[in-house]
Each structure stands twice: as structure tokens, then as C-alpha cells.
Length: 177
Image (cartoon, rainbow, N blue to C red; front, side, top):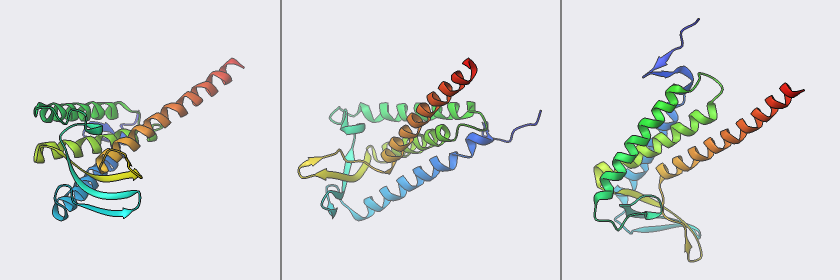
């Protein structure tokens, strides 16, 4: 039996995707640094009629959930982000070396996004959001690169699950014939 290359306990296949999470986290932190350097809170630049850059501080979670709480949520979301990140690393560690590229990429993106927002909470006490999309007066909640990485990562995991269902159906069809 050949021994697989491992990196921090991850098999070669899963560790090949960690760069994606690191890149997402680095891009997230770099864009937030740019926003902090160039914008005060609530400063706004309209890029397109439906898209603007506006520095906002979110003490809550997605869609500003719990943002009006008394401050305990900062530490709760830090603990949750670290726990989710640890769980993702365990999941990545258990992935086979081949055949799980979409899942590994999705998990890595979620890992990078989660850690990007954890860094904000530790350093600033809140998450820096700055991307605002709207149609007329209907605004989608502001978000950042980390949130985008989490969303794309989740979509990749859903896609992987749907493709796996198709593969399982095809295998059952072959074995029943």
C-alpha cells in the first residue's frame, strides 16, 4: 500500500484545496483593510445604480441577526466560528484523496470565510461589511468577501450533494440490470 502525502493531518486531495480558503480569507482581510483605510462608517460610493460600497459595522450575524444584543454575541460568534472551522478541518481530514473536489473546495471556501469574519470580531469587535446591492429602495443586507466565500462554498456543497445523488442513482440502475 502506498502512503499518501499528508499536510497538517489532511490527505493530499483535501489539502490541495486549503489554498482556496486561505486565498478567500486573505482577499477578505485585504478588502476590509482597504475599506477601513478609505471610508469612515456609513461613507458610501455608488458604483452602479444597483451596487454601492458602504462601510458598515455588523455586530450580529447574517442579516444583522442579534446585532442589537448587549455584546455577548461577539464572543458567541467567535466561539461558533472557531468551532465551525475546527469541524470543517476534521471533515476535510476525512475526505478521500480523490473524487471529492467540489466538496473540498466548498468546505475550504466556508473555512476561509468563517475565519475572515472571526478575525474581524476579534480585532474590531464587529464584522466589516461593505458590499450593498439594491433595486430601487429594496436593499439586500450588506455583506463582504467572507460572506461571499461562505455562500459560494455552501452552493458547491449543495451541487456536490445533487451530483452525488445522480451518481448513486446511476450506480443503482447499473446494479439492478
